[in-house]
Image 1 (cartoon, one colour):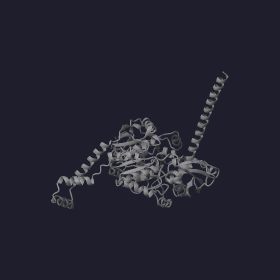
Image 2: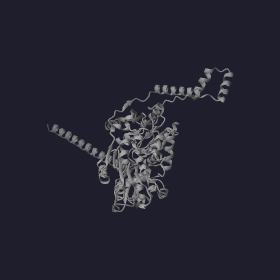
Image 3: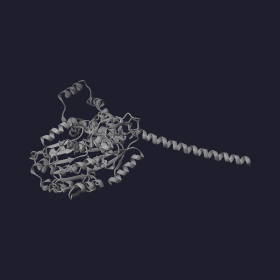
Image 4: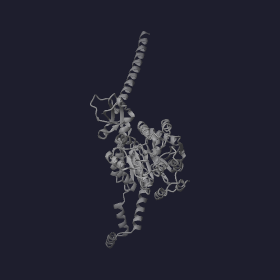
Length: 572
């Protein structure tokens, strides 16, 4: 193992790293930091939980020149959550470095405040592609002093539709090749390799083998649950494992909200995180989770990108992730910093069982099956926990008032055993959750009722479908799954959006910029197109009509055959 002392970094950063509790560098840090410090371009492949933020962040801090007027390093991230997380980590690493200012810029935050911070000068800018492009067009972000540009989670940015923005940002770098380009990605698809070839100068490849993934430090289990009973099973498992910090993943924002309501209803402290929330509220939620005042965080995959909390001891996949790589990202939230973690997946029915098998093949791991605790096991667990709680209270001592009350009861001649039994009856609640009978949290189909919005840009503006999806995802913080069909016309575009998100999109996208052009958005009042939800119904109707015609044809053939036989009999 390589120590940070061996990486030839400054005393100021070593002091900060030591205070953060790190001594040994991770594999990606040990391999990448020396190359980046030497000024080489680096193409790195590593997953969530491998410490890549420090791998590029420490060299970026080291090369900042406080006397320069504009930023020396530009870090591009796919989501606002990851931007916030990276900026927070860099501030920790640069705690004792004088003159290093870090400014995060992303959509959903007032741009005027960002402009003020950029004008005051900074060493490192961390931002999302869309907001970086916005500042470049406004000329509030200058690239003349850039010495290093970093793409973090580059494959995810391509998946979100930011390909053109990334290429444009890289093409706007100083023409004289005096800066480094660092690219980190969990995967290396052909498009990533093309970008590396075009914009990097003889890059050094740094690859972390899959065997080194955080996944290896995580025990993986799955529980089969009767259909529609997952919410009750979730409560059973939270009670059984009693985690210090737990992350629960769901595939939709509605399910996140439903689960939070269900847990809170049963006095289980839980907070929620998804794209519909204002940035201030998200920051408050994350602070509550990190501090442990809200020990359970329920989140969607998009909202959770970039969350980096070392002490999560349990991850629960309430929904099976819609992408195998998301599974790795999810369970990578636990088992960090040399600690063991536990990841649990809930499945219902044969289809989800098949999806889980696909995940096992993809990750090359065996996810063990466990049976849900029986009623007897739940009772025994609750009883043991209650007894331990009473013992702990006795060890911590009793108050004078409680002792006075006890003496009063004894003075009245009540036996000690009866007093204790009565108190236990009053305080001991051995609730058994029957997953066969209790009502469950409603699930929502992947289809949605869509409203068509009209955007004031089209083909003549050079706009493509990916530009629209990326802009909506960033400005509104919603998943692309809430966006249906997109019809790019000559001078406008029609976009189907989940009806539940229409107000959010209308407010956030009004006057937003797509490919440098200000956009007007309104509800399209033209004759309605078939929306995402109705398209499925239409397909079903067509299918049913075909089946009906086949049945009628078979019936007709059978009838004709029987009539023919009857005629032959009569002739005979």
